[in-house]
Length: 531
Ligand SMILES: O=P(O)(O)OC[C@H]1O[C@H](O)[C@H](O)[C@@H](O)[C@@H]1O
Image 1: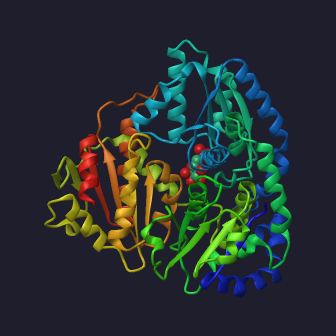
Image 2: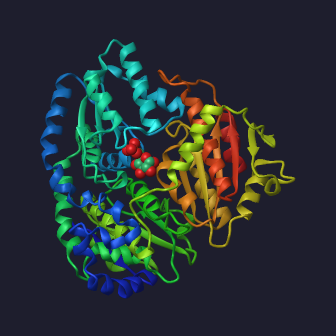
Image 3: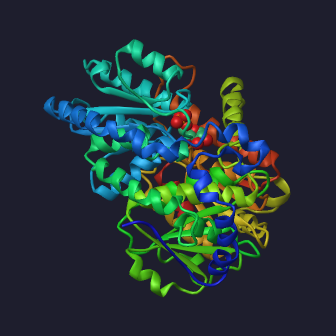
């Protein structure tokens, strides 16, 4: 089932206006041929080493058998639980692939000490760990790997029998892993992280967990021909025009699963779109919502709804102003990758870099080195510490007053970002905050778990238009976890990540309010205060 795009209203007009030009400029065939000039001279050097994803299906085929053999080998040794350590592009695709296939994969893309401990201290005897990092230097992934090495060693298990590494050739992780005797898969370095779904990064953990990766590649393969032709029927051109070509531009892309068999595609699309387009003060903000979201009730003029539906029949009845999308998972992944690259061209940005992600990493590193005393909250309400810029919070004495002040600061074309640096497996109830804030603010609201979102919407928040306001929720819960041979703990790392990102956002002139909770009762008080 190749991808089908339907649209009504401004998105349909955008398709009618832009697709003929894209066809005339031979954009689809030039992209398929790997033409690095599509994004202008400033992006050419990078684009020339970032288009490997177009050939990923063919390049990845030999992996299918290798991964199947390894899965059988592991199963023969009684290893049935697969954990994936990785951030952003190194974990979001396997999460969708395995959830859609209905096979279990434990994704650890966290630094919260409780969440890490919950994964690392469980069922070690039957566990193998995939450590995925293109760069091989991502601090979260390195720390997770160290936690597993220590846990295996403490349990008398040889880590070399359990740790499988996916990385780019020549990375520091490759060198260290080969020296340690780990099984290593290398991937094509001309594929950036968020475009790596159909490379070893998407396939190794998914295949080991039991997903049918041969079928996934078949689906993507079938999508290639329609995506490569210079024709008005090309779904990649249609989707690019619909998400980047509305006038005036609807730059908040609200993604809702409504009948699709694909589970969690929104989170993967979120990274692809936010990191690819959110830069140079422009971009498209992906907002992942549930079916009952306030954003869907009467969408604001700057909101473009994308409904992920079951099949093309549903697209015959596209709701006014919406885009509908259906297709197999493999075809949807290829289609979004094409559409994002083409949308980047239409927006005049380089869709293959992420210039503002680094700033938060640098700030976190600085805080870990300097270890400043924690800043005292302005006040505490119901066990929740409240901090934020003085003029904004002047006179506020409760959590709900502070949040009201923050929401009052959202510009007419702005958005709210809720960022929770907590154990997402233990506190899924926090996600309800998104709905309440969206309803209260009347503006699109994103919800991200930290540090996971730093590798996704984090780029847009700092590099996109300056119209976001930020609500951080951080924890000072007890029960930290050491990281072997590192001068900081998981608790110190996540605290520095939150404080570092808040600092960079504030430096960019974005208002940030930070709510600090120490235990479950403070979390409950916070949720009540936001009701
Ligand atoms: O795979 P890694 O090198 O560990 O990178 C993981 C993530 O790191 C950064 O945040 C990048 O901005 C992401 O695009 C990438 O997916």
